[in-house]
View 1 (cartoon, rainbow, N blue to C red):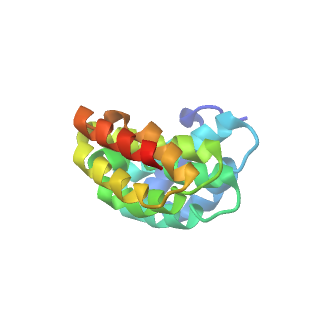
View 2 (view 1 turned 90 degrees about the vertical axis):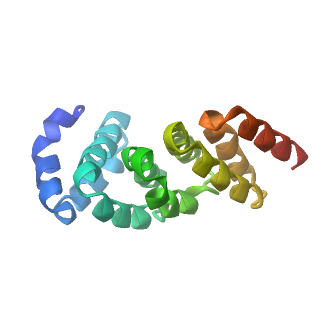
Length: 165
């Protein structure tokens, strides 16, 4: 059983050369019932995205539409690193997931916002402001959890707006 990224070094190395060659293998891991294997899948994609962010982002756009919540969660979770450096690049993936009913997915999307918020709090604030207009309980949950790295004044504004919904 695969429980550590070190056990899939060959997949990561192959993926850094050509991500398309490993997406199916990683997707099967992401759909596994064992959470450890799912974490390895997300982390493997995170490692690949350090060298090939565009290719991973394009694939995660498709994964974000999957019926399996584990695959949707992997789509979000695998982009944490890219979100720290370029949150605009992953926006279209998390945008697809903002209404997701799965708590597993919502926590991951909020985590991506928090990671991006450490470095780009104004960008995350603008995303959250835009998402307030959706008036969806799942989106509101993500905003509440994801805004924690926004500036204090921004957090207060979002909390007030969420209170009005």
